[in-house]
Length: 224
Image 1 (cartoon, rainbow, N blue to C red):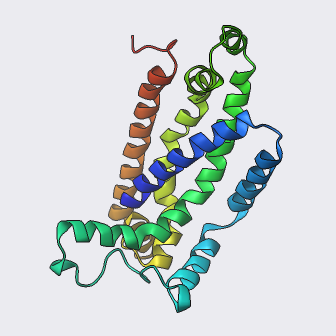
Image 2 (image 1 turned 180 degrees about the vertical axis):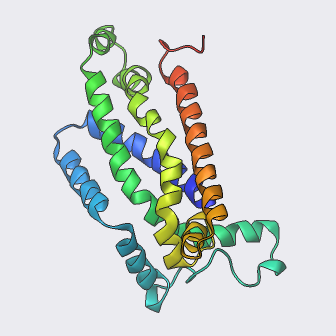
């Protein structure tokens, strides 16, 4: 759950501004370079990147991250702050592996949604009134262009839990993904059903959050 929530937060934190910037700078050299890099990231399998990062940053001269696990072995001797920092240090590479694919996809959705809105009549009217370009993009265009991005929130959480199986196995993190994989291999149907139930609940929570966020970004939508 920590891995999934952290990945969702990181994906939205980076992809939304990146998508908005890419739409504003459409067809420029920098936009084409960013688009190329994002599609390259999207095409890389997560297990391949996980193995590369594991061998590059956990062993040898560039060994700056812990090797495996969710926390260090001396966790009982740590303070609360030390424990939080230790966990964050251990899950940095797994979060990167879970986030880069969604980052590439979501930023493209944000770009496309904003490009559809930025040509609308009310955007031209806002510019004709003399409003600053930043106000026009952020307050008027970006809010209405975020509807497709918010819709994806309903499926992103359970998808990350299902997709974290390989990452958790590679980094030996005892999370939901590896627990589901172990339960399937051991024919533990009760555990499998429990994990699927949690995924279903997360899907409903994601749909609820998406519906609530619609009213925040689009003034035409109300709770009534």
